[in-house]
Length: 273
Image 1 (tube, rainbow, N blue to C red):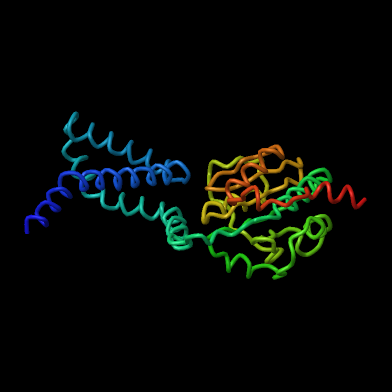
Image 2: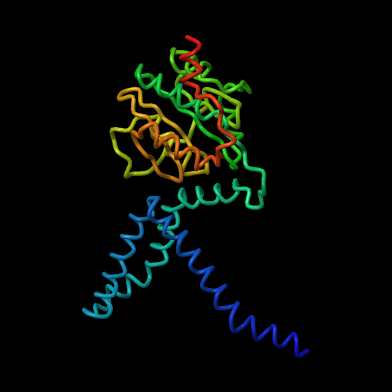
């Protein structure tokens, strides 16, 4: 019994406070991400204004009639806030459900990123739009099912063929997993973020929309400007140079040096020509 009592005291004195603070920090961090990256910031600002107004009316001015009305109506205000935040809550639940929390050693390898970047650079020069989804741990069956299933080898020539000409699959997205193009012409959910720039086109809004719902990394080539951008973690990074694109993709897709292709795709195309 003395051993169990010692373990219990050790847990209460040391482990319990650390665990409590760790979990609280984690919850605060996710709440911060939720507020900053969604429309919840607008709702939070409205709630703060309401609280300030309530404190002034009740504690400072002591307006009894108005205080009585506010006390009766505040449950409706809370319900309204929940309804307004419903899309954001749905996105969080989707992300939690799609993530493989206990995935160990099963990370997918993307060894053909160079092929995608080569195709992106060529299409950028020609002012042709492009939308490629790098699928990670999240399952995207609905996205893949919305397009034409290919299960084809990932090559820059195939990507250029899909996006260079006005084919039926030109306006959709290609979903990539490993060294395969799973599907083309796929439809992505459009972002409902109010803060997105109005100059962004449908491809950029679709890329941002998918990044808000899962852990995929989406590459976009602008048809108007030729800018190559990346969307991930609910953020759109616009007009990135090729070196930055390569570094981000290698980091986000967990590509190690020994997994990279020994010959650069651009060199292969130059030597072939």
